[in-house]
Image 1: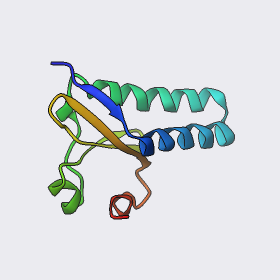
Image 2: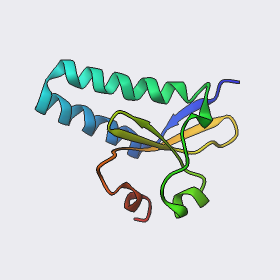
Image 3: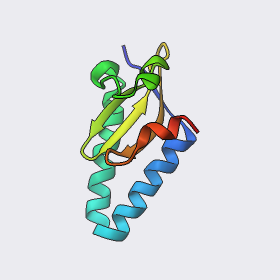
Image 4: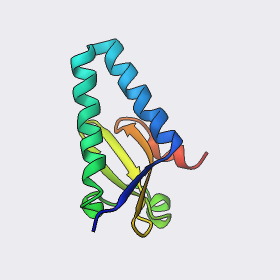
Length: 102
């Protein structure tokens, strides 16, 4: 079964920020490669929604969040029937769990 990806506005903003930061600091080739890897990981969720793991945060797990690690980035999503809402895409070195408490 193919699931449908639903990028939430915050995730779109995250992706734009990641691309802009990579472009500024490393150039177009690296920015394109980074974005391509992240988007490929997100697309893979369509066929394999459980390929991500539970998060290290109990609250996020209770709320149904899962995370997929792609390089240095974590993609946070839920499985809602046939829909996969993607909520955030953040650097794994960031204290990302606080983003969901705000």
